Image (cartoon, rainbow, N blue to C red; front, side, top):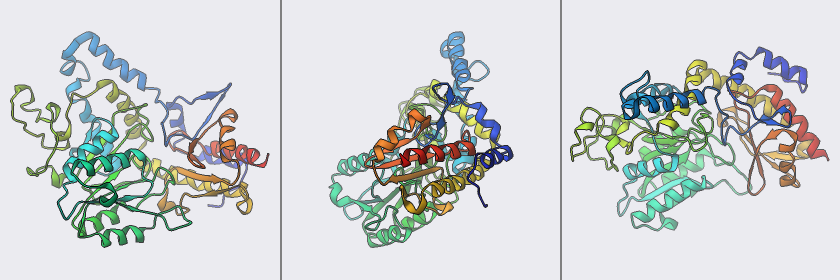
Length: 423
């Protein structure tokens, strides 16, 4: 598509956008007396206007039925979560029974590593990307130490080549091949939080399995952002948060996926709790755990209904709009974002984009390194009505989310950023 750098053109794209009405289903923050440009869906998605109603429904059931709210009312709590998995299955490309909504992201990562990181004296290494999100790094280190290994030896990080910011697929595959006799787990992000680089999950999974290792992924920046086919790609496990692109609220309940081939494996180790017991005999209060015949076997504690309610509000919108439609619009927004940034950055005068230019290797997020006084430029964005994100030491991240961002948002951001850079 041949773009134009003008407000009229941006408005023209918005007029043609078949999904433009969904912006009205979210609360847009204000700066002063104007709606802000909110490019922080990669950090915390905006609140669906129906979220408060969903929470109120749970509160009213609690008031009217007490504990019987698990079994009574229009939306009994016992099976409340079962309406969410089919929607999530379309978003992450999984079968509904492979998905469970529970806990928070790093808790789920630990629980899944208990099952899928089973090191031996000779096969104990974890291969991951360099500069993974710190919480992942802490989880890897603590799991390795839990099994008596030294993180400096057991954790193998794949780095970008010197002078670059992106990790090549060839380097990932070469690292897996080099450690094929000692690797137990290959665990990458779906999308790197710092650069916005999308990793080739299918190829990485295949290489891990050929090396005799399991393949898992942290999809914090991928779920609700890029097209995924976890089941088809034969991924062993994955986990994600729901407060970024899935708009389910700060600290919202998270999600996990376990491939169905593992669900009937009676030798698989797992930390177990009451809520993961098969619901057919859960209330018999028997001392022996009988796992649910699906991913819910990894549940441990009673479902937090208030968190599920906000999650449901957002997922209902995803069900209505269709995730494939959102991915298509995301690609259009991203194309326009790159065009606008390239237009204002004549000959690389002001900044460098470190997010891949290939549309197949990026999602919503664009990360830029400002050439001079990056933090000073960032600090002026919010007073000018733009919510963006700062990552040390010098990166500004922006994400045009298809559910509620517009082409006009991108154009006005470009105008404002150029003004700040040119001062």
